[in-house]
Amino acid sequence: MRFKSSLTKFENSSLATDFASDSGSDDPEIEQEPPEVSLPKSISGLSTVEPTTVLMQRSPSLIQQKAEELRNTLVAHRHDRHLILLQDFPDPDALSSAWTYQLIAQQYDIKCEIIYAGTLSHQENIALVKLTGLPAQRCTLPTFREKDLSSYQGFVLIDNQGTTSQLMPLVQQARIPLIAVIDHHNLQGDLKSEFLDIRPYVRATATIFTQYLQTGLLPLDSSIPQHVKCATALMHGLRSDTNRLMQAQEEDFMAAAYLSRFYDAQLLNAVLQANRSKRVMDVIERSLKNRIVQNNFSIAGVGYLRYDDRDAIPQAADFLVTEENVHTAVVYGIVHDEDEELEVVIGSLRTTKLTLDPDEFIKEAFGRDSTGRFFGGGRTSAGGFEIPMGFLSGGNENSAYAKMKWEVYDAQIKQKLLRLVNPRDNPIQSE
Image (cartoon, rainbow, N blue to C red; front, side, top):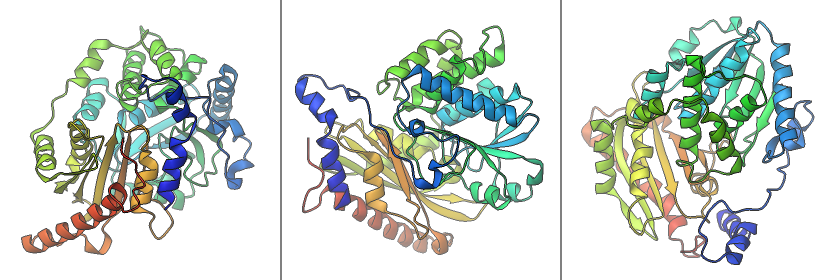
């Protein structure tokens, strides 16, 4: 089984060696310098893609090099109009990074529109956008289809590589050139972009953009309210993707230290104090009621959810993983999109287990669709998956049918998860 071999390989890595030589330390971030990640041949010939593009860029010269490449790309596109595509359900890291890119591009008279197809349902994301005035816009598929795309000279992917955006196929059909991809997730395919900066070993895209700021791409000024709000958003994005800095590495701390000169602590606190809605609390309650616990995994299906309540699923997973004797939680449900009359199974994974790779686990559990695209993936301590229901979408007016459909999906997802959680050959070793 591929997951078994990859997990064994991970456990035998230098990380495990470091722990063995430092008994008593439970810091998950002790590691050696990571190796370079080889690029697919399909993009290795691009002038802006260097072998150093997808490794941890701790060297100031490498950071300066990528910043200079981005500057040259922006200079070449002066006076353009670009789209910034975010994942359907953008998080603070994506939102803050996109805003930073927009402000940097403005200096070259490039007008950027930040758009996403899904919704903001997490209370902190809603508060971030409202309190800072962050200029991100929801653009549903029907609205986007009516949009005149001929007025755009390019598009940009930030904190994603197009695989989590419903808008990506329409942009490609319109033959809009891909100008830049800036992300901290693993390389996910053939990306023919003028500028590419993918750093899988950086914990947050906000860290990458803060490094751009430090090189002078946008000199922050604490007397400019927009700069203060953007710095606050970046601090929130960095904090969010590093689990409140508990999984931060040196470059993340350095970025946070730089942002500390400009961000508004009171504004950030107001964002973090946003209250959970009653619907979110109801989903968390359902996850507690429905969960099963095996081998320190907590697995819970929460039934049907409205599209606007999608972010209740990761919040429920965040809650379940805090239970005693649980190191990994998976929560999933069927989310209904009334605008598109579509349904999709959406799930989130959270883990505190050092030797469990969420990306490997989710890909092994759910595999790929007919086009070869994985249904999900992850990063350190977190992951997610989305499985379109296609022909079986809808028909929920009949409560008996809706119940039967949920029971089938619930059983199938549990079966796929439990074959990894508690298999006969036990590929996941207990702590």
